[in-house]
Image 1 (cartoon, rainbow, N blue to C red):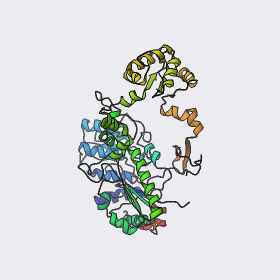
Image 2 (image 1 turned 135 degrees about the horizontal axis):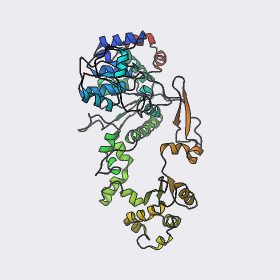
Image 3 (image 1 turned 90 degrees about the horizontal axis):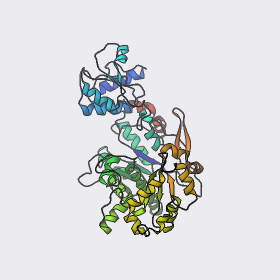
Image 4 (image 1 turned 90 degrees about the vertical axis):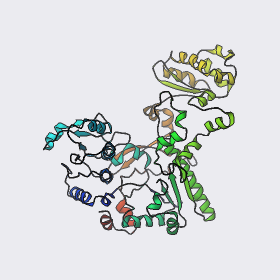
Length: 481
């Protein structure tokens, strides 16, 4: 089978800071190349983009001097977020007696704050107030450029780090486009055009290229230029209204809009590849996070437009007769009775309330939906009398949709998940072993064709890919310095 080459690019400040402050950038780069630490104010720029770019390039900040050019809160936030993933413990120095800035920086995840003016590193260490956050590498998005979130999404890839603002970066990009089947970008509308790779340029480089563009809000409309993240898409699409309590609004849950948009982009790309194979025509695929998230939850829109019903966090749950219960040991279970009469009858018999089969309030599906809260209160009293393990044993003998509500650790230990062999171990030559979720799609009952390559470090394959493109790594060093 011919292997398709998919090129995914994302806008980053990596190795691009020289455009704003070449003296600072080159001084620090030279010192790090000599094996020296950057301490005591070698970096003192008031431009947080400098720190972001250096962090993205793998520089480890031991001490960032802010004494002589105090930054605003937003600049402190940006700098701390850039530097908190560095492998060395980043000390951030702020003007004396700036308790507000100290609290803000620790709240943002700074590993340490230096308060007084001191002269030696020993005194500096003694002056540090460590923030109450987990160690670097254990945050959900921490661990520098190889954190848990990054590793969750980047297996079976190679990584090249280039700047599209340099001649070398543009040359490399052009060569990659020429040999790729698919180009995937997630810039805001118009960014790739401004970087010199508009649609006409891409088609001229490779007429067979399928270009998939993922945006937050689409390419038109009043919001098209806004930045967008998962939580924003969940908010605008209405998804959050299906989960949170409007009287006590607090966001919860995992990434949905990002993942769903990726799934829709994947099937758009696959359909374009199929058409290209049949007709030779290469399409541009456009997906935005708002429409993708809306399309992922069509029911609330159907309830509104067809029934005139306003969906909240409980409408679908009531209509589906789905329940969550707390057992005697505090553990949780879920049941789903839906429309089948036998599910309801076996449910009430299993919980020891067989008389409810003939209760007029629950004898029909419409009655059970209308009296959802009443049925839930009756059943939860029963569930409080036994531990979860006992309830699971009892329900195992009945033909009822049920499950424990697992936390993530429980999922990995569940007998069904183990039987499916849902996880595998990936090995990186530098970072070691990590656990990954296998592809959920089997072909002819198998998935042993799935590659098992650990996620790359940022820019890990830059030299290797540049050599493949005919651009020597030595040239790359000159083009990025």
